[in-house]
Image (cartoon, rainbow, N blue to C red; front, side, top):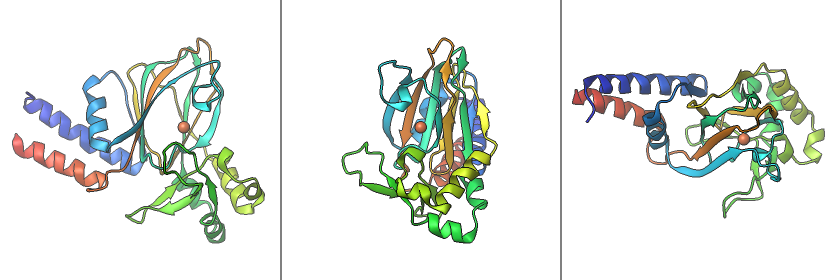
Length: 236
Ligand SMILES: [Fe+2]
């Protein structure tokens, strides 16, 4: 049974958490708050995939290789990605983040119009995935939603000025760089924040668990958090 302090800490935590996620598109939670991981997963929405991100020398999958990964989003069905770090490699494996909203702001009106017509190969994971998906679209609230990985761009589209401008703007953006440590939790809005990784070197025993979380369909995320905070405060 939680006491009053727990309730207040909980309300304060969720207020900060939702604020950061809304304003910055990501949130890192340091330390080893074991109870927070389950709470976060429960609050954000349904978990649609869990992947153990470890280096497998024989693996052909990029995510489980030791190679650097360029900026991309994961599958578009994942509104949020949560990484829980169990172990960091002694060298490398840094996480890099770039805000696609900032990249989009740098695009001219005409380039934006062209980018709206670009479709990327679908990262086929789920049974009813289609052949392609738009680089930029709008969600049910009218917010821009990005889907991008350079390796999923059609060859012909790589010659388009709009796509080259987009790629160059990502390169020019100064990324947020962090090295996740044991116990850290990183949450990103996968429709907004592009993520990348430096090559994993050193001990190569980096281990993260990655959760893909679909958007809640019934009530918008922030409404859920507000309801939770209000509920808890009224229970004190
Ligand atoms: Fe990824």
